[in-house]
Image (cartoon, rainbow, N blue to C red; front, top):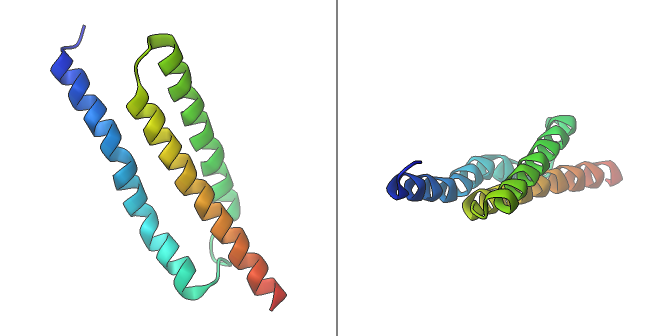
Length: 101
């Protein structure tokens, strides 16, 4: 059985992951806001990433239910899914805005 220090350290790292992940989204979001265009962004890739994030959240919730621990993984997965879905929404918004002009 891993030590409490190891488990606590791993949980702290898992809480840091969404912050690092969100920082990786910032350049994409800045580009979308700046250009108001998403024509050069693959919507299918972001939809696949959405499915992947949803599956990761499912896994995290199942682990929480089975083990009674794992809130950091659930929180990380929720933030990741929100960030991906926000990107998909912006892609769709700027595609439809471009077509209506």
